[in-house]
Image: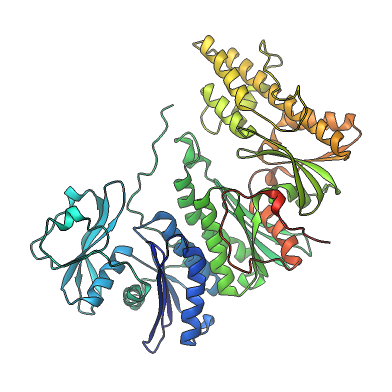
Length: 221
Length: 339
């Protein structure tokens, strides 16, 4: 398997490549509003560094939300183009799971509550545990809600992401890594696991998980 | 050369392939109108969401028809003007494809696509010509001296003509987008007791203003509550007559000022029957010729983007340094297309 992974669902932008020998090549930059331009450069970078030909890519993975709407669509649309162009399937991976994976890859906790600031006094959040493969495994479901809606179980060991606003951090005595952002390198681990479980999707049929679906007021005619 | 065209600037997803040797076109068009109707107008975020769902499956269908992805030689997409989030879907789909295929890619000006849409069907205009672009987002008169060499002669200072149609339709209780329904209502009677002004026709210049017509309609609607069917038809009729007459007067003026013989009418409002008839009569009086694109190319579509892109790509123009999409983009700033 040679998997290319893209993430542009937050202010961070990243691309990574998992070569079939297990080696990972990655680019990461925090660069708001630069994603459209950066992604192709990053893809080119990991490809040439790894020596993998485009034609040998087997999957294209991308973070499919929740996160910044336009950002998610940048990676989703580019991944669709790559999938259709190369005739390879896509691996959509949750942005929150990716964020949790970043935290679990870096710190030795058994679980984490990944949270992203959704603005309008709400956050996207979910709890993940470390499974046998070392992958972030969702417990319960991904949610969008206000700070008061968040339940923190007694066995929670850590937190990650900028959704851990000061008010929320003040409610717990846990290590909280609010500076962590999703990263294609960690996304690859989840993508590879999904590929092994045959969860790849045809490029034209892939979906985005916005979580926030109330985005306009209906007209009163 | 087969060029893929991707249009996603507003509420229509258009995917097409144009072959510049054979002139063949393969296309798919999806309108989101139903999605936006209940909101009373285009909701940009919903438009973007729909593009990302619809564009790729439409692309796959077309690729199947033309015999696979390898038949594509280059990719054109709408770079602007339009809704940023919506434009980004098409631009990034194009970018992913171009990267995967190692094929050239070019961002196309949406209005240039409309200007050149008449070239896609039988009756082609000859250069130079005056183009009237009339749609839900734009109203302008353009001096087309050469392909790629455009000078804006006049444009709307406020509402676009299609927007004025939709807003007035809303005043009359028609659901969004009420423009075509308003036109049908207007055509249901022969005369109206009301007479609306012809804005900005009694002074020199080729600019337009349509927001006053909407206000004229509003004043009548307020004075005549509750509205009956006859009165609604009369307001619609007076409104449409004023719009059509104003456009006719300005087109006449533009042809006289430029000395050109030909008028090209593009954009969704170009499908309006009264407008077509009035312009045909007017231009015939001037011994000129008026050219309309086929109805399927009047609205936003991928074929016009593939066509405009093909002209430029054939001259070696590409997005060398990756460019961003543009909400605003002057037609006059485009480079020439060349011979």
